[in-house]
Length: 392
Length: 248
Image 1: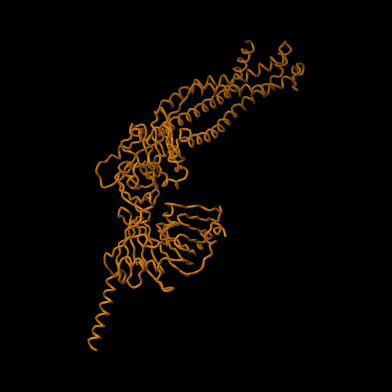
Image 2: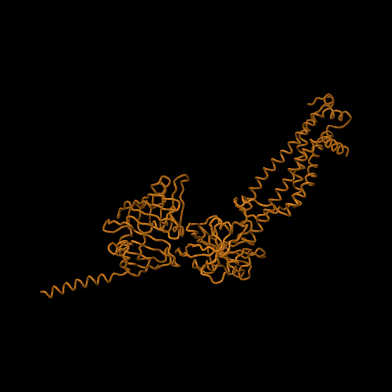
């Protein structure tokens, strides 16, 4: 207890030097929690949006379909199997049909994937109801805002689309853009035109076929697949995103590793300086009966005190900042879209108690280590030399 | 004697007019096939692509054997030089020498994709099928096109696996070459227009010298295809139509 009191007294007595170290360390502490919370929030939001809008509770893929190989699209269709047909009727699954096509917006040639979806489906939160346009001379088409930007298409535009039917014969028709949806999920937007499933099936000359069958996110039992249909779970469907997060996580780990290193270096520096400047004091303490271990403990505790103070100070000013950003969110710059992330314009960080505890623990241990390292010199200290101001 | 001469003259005129009247769409298609379908040939051609962004000229040499074998080597410009394409049935292999030295396989619907941004698809470029086997035809009329007397034929696909469901063809009466052609989608939408501007006679057949392909849905100004040289009836060794030949 005496050591603790002494350590606290010594640290507070050091004045500005202590508070500068504490401030830098607390800044690193808050920033690490803020960044981690941001990634957690981003992960939760993107995964939630993708499940709601695109992947549901998992998907059955026609065996020829390979999302990494656009050349497979036109061969990837098969009749909906009976067990899944039942789920489709009960609004527990919805079929989606893909077809490669070429569109000619303002006479330009542009590739696009036609995606057929039931306008009345209740499985995804995808706004397919816009495709219920009633009688019209044109097939209704729905595009995302990114597709609208890339193609120059807007609501009410008529665009010619050319595709090949199941026999490879060219066909072409005009599609009317009935709505431009603003979606955070890029994978339902970029280079795609959504049209009614029945229309696309008629266009390619195959009835009751699909490329993927999306299950409802709340489905309890995953039905069995078949040689033609393979089930893809969330781990598979979200693998790209998780890989992206891992890559970003590595990047941020380096960033806040550097930040921590700077703060810890300041503590290390302070410790080295303290041991050099206070050698007479150490000699006196040892002459008065304090063991070498006791002196080491005192100096280590003094260094560690910086960490404890940093956690306290960081919590005092960081908590309101973190709370504010968690409640009001953080506006995302447009540049984030360009790197391929499907994000809401406002991102809400998520801070859990685990995040606070783990960050505090990591910082605490790191501070103990850097505080202890310079004190090893004390172990070789001769009290008489120390009293004379000498150090080994 | 006078009566016999009259009789002969009338018979000749009648038989000639009857012959003219009995020409059918099928006969016209057979004659087109006789002109255009190649057993074996080596040709050099220049393709001038008039795209929205500018004009590009690509020179190539082709080896064709029957309707399912074709080998094309690009000669110019420098950027395309050394690239090769092999077609065997419904598969195409593209060889790109630099920087990757790799072969890309193209099959199925991709045969209908544009070649190097031109108005020609891989299939257009290597097409050597008999029209008479692919289409049912009717003569819908006769017209003068570019000062050439033409039969106007309307073709409808016989089978389901043809690229263009229907075509309208202006066939020159004197040469039986399709001077103008419009190719339609299943829905009836016009997709492509071809025109033959210059022709030449070789080995007793008429063949296009200069033709234009235009994808009518796009804003481009079309692609010119000029046959610089062609040699029919040559014996092309089989190794020419192997993947190994791509890297030679």
